[in-house]
Image (cartoon, rainbow, N blue to C red; front, side, top):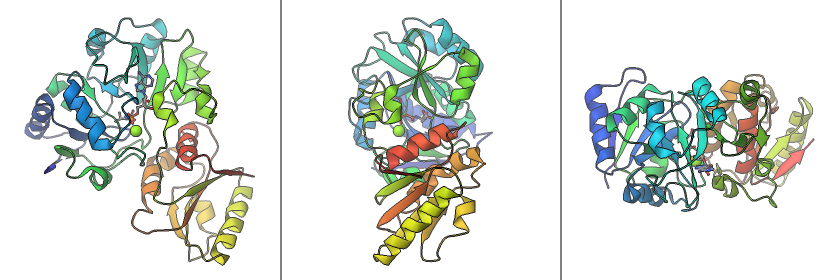
Length: 349
Ligand code: TXA
Ligand code: MG
């Protein structure tokens, strides 16, 4: 299949181009598009066949449900049986934005969207391109991150094409995504809303707004827990080589990484690292490095994370060592992704 390539301005996308892309979605085609978090792979969310094509293009397990994207709050009403008070508070505060809310669903949501669950995840993105596309299509758009299942999410059109060129009908390129990690997923069907996936809206922001938030035990990597967000049980975000995550405080964490590097180099291994600028200054020259920013700049680290994880695709290494950061603000989402990317192979200080 030939993948049509559209380039638009992030803030003022060309109307005709957007209309062409929306037309493809209405015809049941697959269109990758940028959001403020990551690129999504969109299809008509009410068309089971179109949604099934998403699963096929990504190689995604069919019990991992998709998020429906809408362009205004009105479009939520036919999709859900009720809007709990807590959900309304969250929507008023954080929509449009990087927040996904889980509701009880109505019958117009195809089973394949919700992976057989009685619930549906809905998000109203802030990105102009995403919103205009959804509004022009006039339908809820099912869109997982536009990567091959198990790979790091794409934050650029180039990363989407690396995985899906020739497997999807079109892509809209509007440059790099601002936030760089996916939306926060909150289940509002529980008496106290439950955080299922940390993301662009931080836990601190949720606590501030709601006073009380439960945290899904599966978030801590507990294998004995049954994840309520089905996506959490699969390998995710995996780079091209095995990765070990280091957790601890600076500068001890850097000392620990440098020691491991020395051992690996002495054993003749080719080593890659994902580290802060502070640690990068101390690296041996033979190490392949992806630098994500200063340790304090959590937003910058989030924005660079997936590019860093993908940076070893073309420069093969035997092992990747990644430097963890404190779990404050976006740091919680960053650490959640790094832990999963490492398959929970973690060395603690
Ligand atoms: O930022 C984002 O959310 C991006 C952009 C494209 O909007 N989308 C995204 O979709 O990350 P995806 O499919 O890669 O991740 C959706 C997550 C998965 O962990 C999935 O299991 C969970 O949301 N999810 C979807 N529907 C759910 C439901 N009904 N109940 C619980 N979790 C759900
Ligand atoms: Mg994903």
